[in-house]
Image (cartoon, rainbow, N blue to C red; front, side):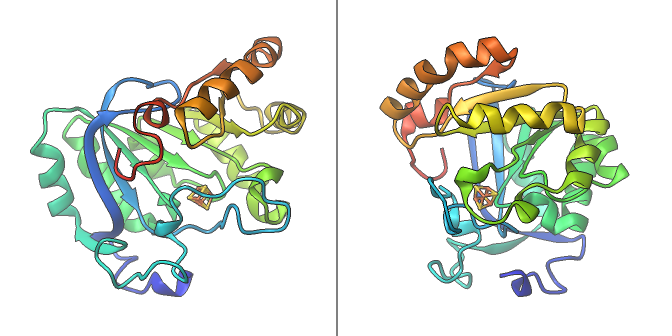
Amino acid sequence: MLHLLDHQAVDDRGLFIADTFGPTFQGEGPSLGRQALFIRLSHCNLSCGQGPGARWACDTAYTWDFKMHDPQDPKIRRRVLLDDLMAWVKAHTVRLVVITGGEPLLQRLGLERLVAMLHAEGYEIEIETNGTLIPSEDLVATVTAFNVSPKLVAAGGREIQRVVPAALAAFASSGKARFTFVVSELAEFKEIADLPERFAMDEIWVMPEGTSADMVRQGMRTIAEEALACGWNLSPRLHVELWEDKRGR
Ligand code: SF4
């Protein structure tokens, strides 16, 4: 998949994107319920749901699974100039911009430039990342927050790809990271519990896996007591409760 990130993609004039959408609500984590604009970038360096032992599937596989989704189709992947993304953002009154994926840090140069442009205009910027790539100093300086979501065994695939110690330590020391874990069963709390001390993670959020409102609500009830006992924060997934797995909400 990475070969598709050709020289045009890694300059700083544009980004490969799957979607721009909003205003909508930030559906999870510390900014839950706030109005936000979303820019969803293409490409990912993981393939959750496809490795041995996977117990859930990536709900945005169209951003990276180009065996199943045609990357030449502009509804799947298109290159957009940063000036055009800024014009789209500025056409709205919302001041929070969430850059998600896929894995946004794969398109490092364009991402850094876009975040610098947004920062210069006074926007709040959250980047949602799987925490496997080290953020640059420039990115740390200009972003408002990283929502870092390390992938657990249930995502499938090899640990060496899912958990990159240098990257997790860099996010933790940035002072701007909130670590968010999507939990599919209570047994995963043990797996999460090793990480905060190992990487000096401060702020931990857990949220239930699920693609329907019923699954999310039931998951919240299942994990609430254990989250309290661990001293972690609990988040619903508001976008799933409102719109289930509809793309672009
Ligand atoms: S890291 Fe996120 S976008 Fe990438 S495959 Fe996993 S769930 Fe999907």
